[in-house]
Length: 527
View (cartoon, rainbow, N blue to C red):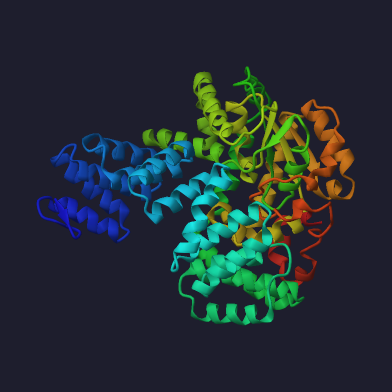
């Protein structure tokens, strides 16, 4: 029995709760398991262990324990809310959406509506999400994050002026709100007045939480860049990145080691063994690249072809791989290449079917091809080739200095953890090029390459070759991509609504004197 955080009958469970509240999750898990060894199947213990597993990133274990707790009390709202959160984090978005909808029918709290809207947005159901988040923003006077979510939704729909107003409303509620300032800064036009720079400097001076201070530095840097003050802009870019790097603790050597292992494993016979019958009827096209490489542009161009449907950046390949890795590592240490090599055909086919079922939630047409443009899938190519033998891979490559510096200037989440140090983003680019070169040697033609600079300067030859690789005829509609009315959920959402331009070319030049660490890592690729 618990009350006010104190356990009267189960002291070990009380200790587990205290440890979890203090963020000491490993110790909390041990205490919760000790409690469950004595009180087997206790629902409160199972629920707490599920919560702890969720914080530790063991999402399948979290789901297991929460479901066991719910078996004793299926109506428990708190545990059902936890289950919805775990399903959302596993990217099982349709299940999470249904559970949030059920919970809201019983008791429609603002926090549930906000979580439901988030899941609907990620499912591509933007109008439904907006119907939930707009009243939350307008009726809740002390929650700037609702205005930020509303702004993101409006911007993706092309309503940029309304998005600017939403971000500014969030700032009115909390001048230190770094995400709102970055929302303004990331819009591809000048939106900052001189008074905004003064306000950002004041906010930086008092911001304590890195979740506010880091994006504030990025936003101020963007405003200074627009004014041509490149030295001051770089100072703030560097500080925002330093704070994010310290907070995340990214280790670039792990990716480098994984690519080296793939080079050893994925020889020509191994790649040939992946030629299996197709899974399902649709053919996914994976645009693989580093972020800020032109993937959104390529997606919108190809998505103007009648045989191809663009569905954005789908999180499902990494989510499925993460779940499989969680199961595999329970039996001991295993690397991703080792896991792929050990997959049985029926296992791989089941994972491919799972991916296609989740992707189908985003589809609105019966076009035979659809595009998933999640950039980080470049490092998942081997896994995707294993579970979806019919998949097509397009690599769009932006010149190294432009690509890497553009990453450095973006206030990304931890999903793009390599972007926060010049050396790390440079090493990521080197590893990416290494993998593409290796695949070209052992499986020529498996990955088709598009030169971003050539695409911008003279798109038709690049696009004709790409369509030929896909087995599709030329259609001139793909040159009119910017005239289509689509939701675009990336930092390039305004750019792809304009005709082709060279605005993103040579963006690093004014900062050249500070980019020595990046050039050193890139070596010949910096040329």
